[in-house]
Length: 237
Ligand SMILES: O=C(O)C(=O)C[C@]1(C(=O)O)C=C[C@@H](O)C=C1
Image 1 (cartoon, rainbow, N blue to C red):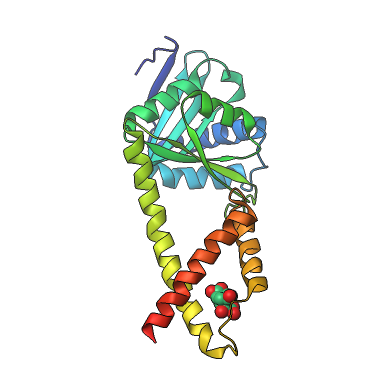
Image 2 (image 1 turned 45 degrees about the vertical axis):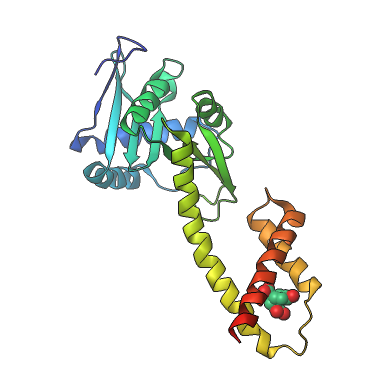
């Protein structure tokens, strides 16, 4: 389909045989951006994208004078890839792809961006995405800090509450596990008094995972969790 941005720009679904071309776009745009070096070579990326083309929704941007210059890859609720080659920069290709993704995922979606990629973060901010949590990168292949972003869609409150519900489901499981451990420890203790040193250490450990909250807040949160866990344990016995 032609885009509003330019009569020369076309967006169309990717074809099954395009993995090699898209791998070139992927690696060229990665190398031009302030991102960690790719951990996979072109052959690996091509093989991986060939698989993704079978399962994911992939849209390609074609510029009349350059051919394929960008692509976007979506899975339900996520924008997994959005890459534009440097030669096509500032021609509205990224915006056109992002607008298409918004139209395809009107309820909202998330994506990950490397923390170091400040141009991409500014681009997404200009386009109404909001930054969610930051990580230290230990869960990604590059081991580089990253940030989750959300486009909250047509009904932001509904979309963001859906994300809260997902996290609360995990938090509930973690609270159940933690309360059970607090209970299991008690019979092995020689005193029923609380151990402020241990509780401070718990808060400090939590702060390495949730720096946005800081040790003092986490100490209060841990205190409430431990108080209620001890109370629940006492009620059971
Ligand atoms: O480690 C202990 O001594 C516990 O009793 C467990 C626990 C906790 O739940 O983390 C609970 C109470 C103490 O004040 C400190 C820690």
